[in-house]
Each structure stands twice: as structure tokens, then as C-alpha cells.
Image (cartoon, rainbow, N blue to C red; front, side):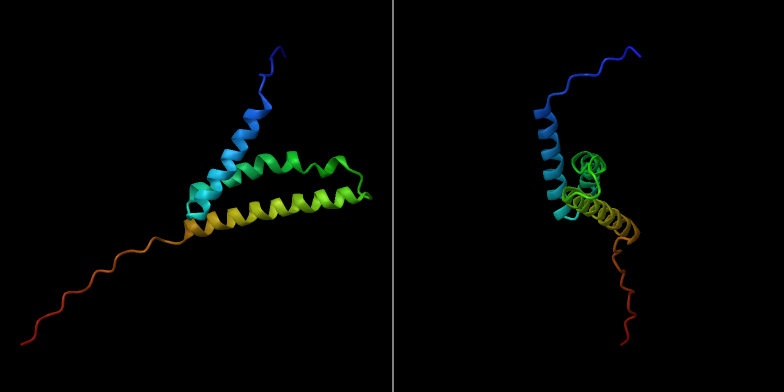
Length: 105
């Protein structure tokens, strides 16, 4: 196709993933939707790359370990999606206006 793949240094990729996971985790602890989105982005990119169970034979013990970690990351993705769904479905608390009481003498 004539398109050259840009050279990306591995140390920059590792620094970006550490920053993404750290900032996302910190914001998630503070109950921020942005933190959940950052962690979701991190898990979506890292899970299929790190846990490549599809390159192992099913009878080997390594397959079971890697597949277990892969499904655990999928469960975390599901939990983050649930958190985001619940966070967006609950309406914000509205300040209740007190009805003015009529003065009786």
C-alpha cells in the first residue's frame, strides 16, 4: 500500500498506559465518570494484547491461567460499563423547595 508504519518507542507506550491506568484509577476512586471511561479505554486496548490465550493449546496449563485472567478483565469491563450505566441513569438530587407556610395568628 505504500504506507509506512510510524516508529513508536516502547517506553512511551508503557508510560502512556501507566498514566492512563493511574489517572483513571484515581478519578474512579473519586467517583468520576471520566475515570471509569479511562479505565475502560485502558482495558479495551490492553486485554487482548496481554492475555493472548488464542496462541496457546487448550490442553496446556498456561492456557487456563491466561484465559482466566482474560475473562477477569472482561468482567472488569462489564463492571465499568455497569457503573457508567448506573451513574448516568440516576438523576441528580434536586434541592427540595419548602412550601411557604401560611401564618396563623
